[in-house]
Image 1: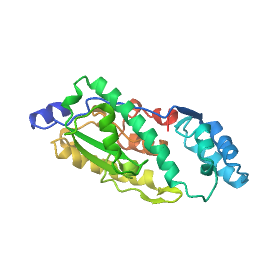
Image 2: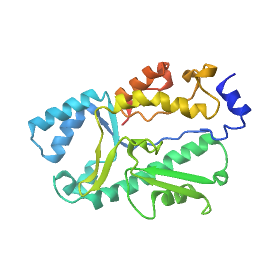
Image 3: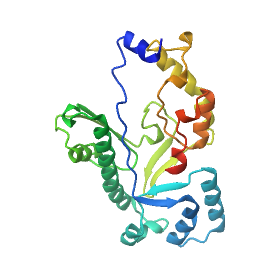
Image 4: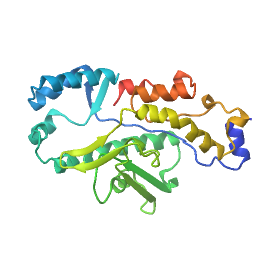
Length: 255
């Protein structure tokens, strides 16, 4: 019996991913030009820092990055290129506008693929680690795509990489004058590898899907926050997944 048949038999399975939408900043930066561009824009001449950033750019395997920052923004806010100056207000002004625009683009694309009227939407869950404002981004998104004022909304701020699964506490973050400071442990890929299968087994067990019936994780739909190639590779290995299940190339082409 397939996972879908079991879920249907158990009277569950009403929550499904019916469509996905995506949007990116319009500024494209090639990874191999990122370091030189950064040092030029900031007038930095620290050889040790440049060597470190160059090494980081190579090990991430990312080839292209889509960013909001542009020369026009740097001209408007030159203080962004200077270390130590208070720039939280400026950063939030930039992010609030850009995040709202991308959220609307992604949502409109998703709704179009979904194929149903927007009036059928009853709930909106909005997650962001790029903004801090009240009213929240959920209000601006709802207004931008024409949701009814009666739509139920939930807003989650600063969940980082665990925004999709709020219970996954893997980061330490705080809002500072210089921006949002995150600390990601080097052992994160190993921690995920050691715990992810037990988590997924327990989750599927609640719906009658477990190893007792010979569940094959390749039969399931996967939507994984990339988090870098090390995490993707560990998950792929742990579940013995086919390469196409994670579509790992997305982490090379976008960041």
